[in-house]
Figure 1 (cartoon, helix red, strand yellow):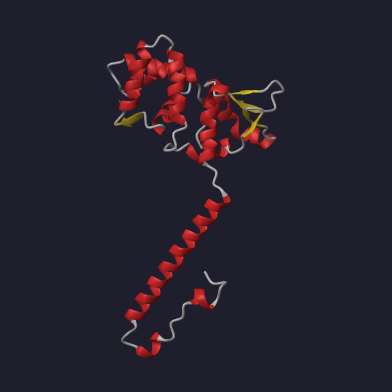
Figure 2: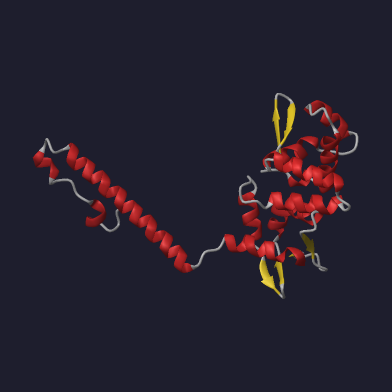
Length: 222
């Protein structure tokens, strides 16, 4: 599991500024420049790699088109930090990243209450999600309530949170439909196997009748 504890928005900003202004994208050179101003270079670059924004090959960095486009906007922006936070957040909650399952699990704990999505974690959940929580606070996606016992999604991100939660929920009817489809696929596969066995054993007529469809004979089978 990625160590979100070692990640911050400022680290990503520093890395972005360095690669944006550098004509030499050798990893060693970028790392030396970065470490003069920030910590956790390897964690920062690993995060960007996982988001498919940066690639490393033979000690050379390649900036992916999406990241290059961001860097152009970042350079000209009047409020670069806001642009960066939005870009990082949108990249992070993309369903195609390696973080998707962990994020899905985290957001599944949030429930709508008084027009806000909130999550009151147990002690073990606080430990499990502390790094991610702090990073999302850094991104201004969520905050701690006044009692510091609940995580609350910032109002401007409520819609995005709702989308994430809804994507991970299915109705009972949908669940039954999925189960039915699985059963149909299983039965079709079983019948294909039986037909194959019959054809293979046609040279032994006495054995054909002995092939039994166990799923029909015994409802507990399969």
